[in-house]
Length: 166
Image (cartoon, rainbow, N blue to C red; front, top):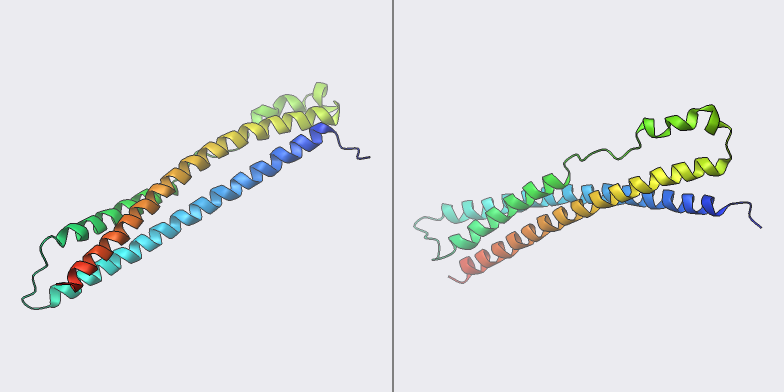
Protein backbone atom coordinates (compact mmCIF):
# COMPACT_ATOMS: atom_id res chain seq x y z
CA UNK A 1 0.00 0.00 0.00
CA UNK A 2 1.29 3.43 -0.87
CA UNK A 3 1.49 6.10 1.82
CA UNK A 4 0.68 8.72 -0.80
CA UNK A 5 -2.58 10.56 -0.23
CA UNK A 6 -5.14 11.49 -2.88
CA UNK A 7 -3.97 15.08 -2.51
CA UNK A 8 -0.40 14.02 -3.34
CA UNK A 9 -1.60 12.26 -6.48
CA UNK A 10 -3.70 15.24 -7.61
CA UNK A 11 -0.87 17.66 -6.86
CA UNK A 12 1.59 15.56 -8.83
CA UNK A 13 -0.83 15.38 -11.77
CA UNK A 14 -1.33 19.16 -11.81
CA UNK A 15 2.43 19.70 -11.64
CA UNK A 16 2.98 17.37 -14.62
CA UNK A 17 0.26 19.15 -16.60
CA UNK A 18 1.87 22.51 -15.87
CA UNK A 19 5.26 21.18 -16.99
CA UNK A 20 3.67 19.88 -20.20
CA UNK A 21 2.00 23.22 -20.93
CA UNK A 22 5.25 25.09 -20.37
CA UNK A 23 6.98 22.73 -22.81
CA UNK A 24 4.15 23.33 -25.30
CA UNK A 25 4.68 27.09 -24.95
CA UNK A 26 8.37 26.69 -25.76
CA UNK A 27 7.52 24.46 -28.74
CA UNK A 28 5.02 26.99 -30.12
CA UNK A 29 7.58 29.77 -29.82
CA UNK A 30 10.18 27.65 -31.61
CA UNK A 31 7.74 26.96 -34.43
CA UNK A 32 7.00 30.68 -34.62
CA UNK A 33 10.70 31.32 -35.17
CA UNK A 34 10.72 28.65 -37.88
CA UNK A 35 7.86 30.43 -39.68
CA UNK A 36 9.76 33.72 -39.48
CA UNK A 37 12.85 32.07 -40.94
CA UNK A 38 11.02 30.26 -43.72
CA UNK A 39 8.96 33.35 -44.62
CA UNK A 40 12.21 35.29 -44.94
CA UNK A 41 13.74 32.58 -47.09
CA UNK A 42 10.68 32.38 -49.32
CA UNK A 43 10.59 36.17 -49.66
CA UNK A 44 14.23 36.05 -50.77
CA UNK A 45 13.25 33.40 -53.31
CA UNK A 46 10.45 35.62 -54.55
CA UNK A 47 12.82 38.57 -54.89
CA UNK A 48 15.34 36.41 -56.75
CA UNK A 49 12.61 35.23 -59.10
CA UNK A 50 11.55 38.82 -59.70
CA UNK A 51 15.15 39.91 -60.34
CA UNK A 52 15.69 37.04 -62.76
CA UNK A 53 12.60 37.97 -64.71
CA UNK A 54 13.48 41.67 -64.68
CA UNK A 55 16.98 40.99 -66.13
CA UNK A 56 15.62 39.57 -69.35
CA UNK A 57 15.66 42.34 -71.98
CA UNK A 58 12.33 43.28 -73.47
CA UNK A 59 10.54 40.88 -71.16
CA UNK A 60 7.04 41.78 -70.21
CA UNK A 61 5.41 40.06 -67.30
CA UNK A 62 2.47 37.99 -68.53
CA UNK A 63 -0.86 39.70 -67.96
CA UNK A 64 -2.07 39.15 -64.46
CA UNK A 65 1.21 37.64 -63.16
CA UNK A 66 1.68 40.63 -60.91
CA UNK A 67 -1.37 39.51 -58.91
CA UNK A 68 0.08 36.25 -57.53
CA UNK A 69 3.47 37.92 -57.04
CA UNK A 70 1.79 40.63 -54.98
CA UNK A 71 -0.26 38.06 -53.09
CA UNK A 72 2.90 36.05 -52.30
CA UNK A 73 4.84 39.07 -51.11
CA UNK A 74 1.96 40.25 -48.95
CA UNK A 75 1.31 36.77 -47.54
CA UNK A 76 4.98 36.26 -46.60
CA UNK A 77 5.19 39.68 -45.00
CA UNK A 78 2.01 39.14 -42.99
CA UNK A 79 2.97 35.62 -41.94
CA UNK A 80 6.36 36.85 -40.71
CA UNK A 81 4.74 39.70 -38.76
CA UNK A 82 2.16 37.36 -37.25
CA UNK A 83 4.86 34.82 -36.38
CA UNK A 84 6.87 37.54 -34.65
CA UNK A 85 3.75 38.32 -32.65
CA UNK A 86 3.52 34.66 -31.61
CA UNK A 87 6.92 35.12 -29.95
CA UNK A 88 6.04 38.41 -28.29
CA UNK A 89 6.55 38.36 -24.55
CA UNK A 90 3.38 37.68 -22.64
CA UNK A 91 2.67 38.15 -18.98
CA UNK A 92 4.92 35.95 -16.89
CA UNK A 93 3.07 33.06 -15.32
CA UNK A 94 4.32 32.77 -11.77
CA UNK A 95 2.79 32.75 -8.33
CA UNK A 96 2.96 36.06 -6.49
CA UNK A 97 5.09 35.70 -3.37
CA UNK A 98 2.31 37.27 -1.30
CA UNK A 99 0.11 34.27 -2.09
CA UNK A 100 2.18 32.13 0.27
CA UNK A 101 3.02 34.72 2.90
CA UNK A 102 0.31 33.47 5.26
CA UNK A 103 1.82 29.97 5.05
CA UNK A 104 4.93 31.29 6.74
CA UNK A 105 3.05 32.17 9.91
CA UNK A 106 3.21 29.98 12.99
CA UNK A 107 -0.41 28.91 12.39
CA UNK A 108 0.46 27.18 9.10
CA UNK A 109 4.15 26.39 9.54
CA UNK A 110 3.48 23.41 11.77
CA UNK A 111 0.31 22.32 9.94
CA UNK A 112 0.05 18.93 8.27
CA UNK A 113 1.78 18.45 4.92
CA UNK A 114 -1.60 18.06 3.23
CA UNK A 115 -2.39 21.75 3.78
CA UNK A 116 0.78 22.79 1.95
CA UNK A 117 0.14 20.27 -0.82
CA UNK A 118 -3.37 21.69 -1.25
CA UNK A 119 -2.13 25.31 -1.33
CA UNK A 120 0.58 24.52 -3.86
CA UNK A 121 -1.80 22.46 -6.00
CA UNK A 122 -4.33 25.30 -5.98
CA UNK A 123 -1.68 27.80 -7.13
CA UNK A 124 -0.44 25.41 -9.80
CA UNK A 125 -4.00 24.85 -11.02
CA UNK A 126 -4.48 28.60 -11.43
CA UNK A 127 -1.17 28.81 -13.30
CA UNK A 128 -2.13 25.85 -15.47
CA UNK A 129 -5.29 27.59 -16.63
CA UNK A 130 -3.39 30.79 -17.42
CA UNK A 131 -0.63 28.98 -19.33
CA UNK A 132 -3.19 26.95 -21.28
CA UNK A 133 -4.97 30.16 -22.31
CA UNK A 134 -1.68 31.70 -23.45
CA UNK A 135 -0.82 28.56 -25.40
CA UNK A 136 -4.21 28.58 -27.15
CA UNK A 137 -3.61 32.19 -28.22
CA UNK A 138 -0.08 31.41 -29.41
CA UNK A 139 -1.32 28.35 -31.32
CA UNK A 140 -4.02 30.36 -33.12
CA UNK A 141 -1.53 33.09 -34.00
CA UNK A 142 0.95 30.49 -35.25
CA UNK A 143 -1.77 28.79 -37.31
CA UNK A 144 -2.58 32.13 -38.96
CA UNK A 145 1.11 32.63 -39.78
CA UNK A 146 1.36 29.14 -41.29
CA UNK A 147 -1.80 29.70 -43.36
CA UNK A 148 -0.35 32.99 -44.62
CA UNK A 149 2.88 31.29 -45.56
CA UNK A 150 0.97 28.52 -47.35
CA UNK A 151 -0.96 31.11 -49.35
CA UNK A 152 2.37 32.71 -50.29
CA UNK A 153 3.82 29.40 -51.45
CA UNK A 154 0.74 28.70 -53.56
CA UNK A 155 0.95 32.19 -55.07
CA UNK A 156 4.62 31.62 -55.99
CA UNK A 157 3.64 28.33 -57.61
CA UNK A 158 0.93 30.07 -59.63
CA UNK A 159 3.43 32.75 -60.66
CA UNK A 160 5.99 30.16 -61.78
CA UNK A 161 3.34 28.31 -63.78
CA UNK A 162 2.31 31.57 -65.42
CA UNK A 163 5.93 32.40 -66.28
CA UNK A 164 6.78 28.95 -67.60
CA UNK A 165 3.69 28.52 -69.74
CA UNK A 166 4.09 31.83 -71.60
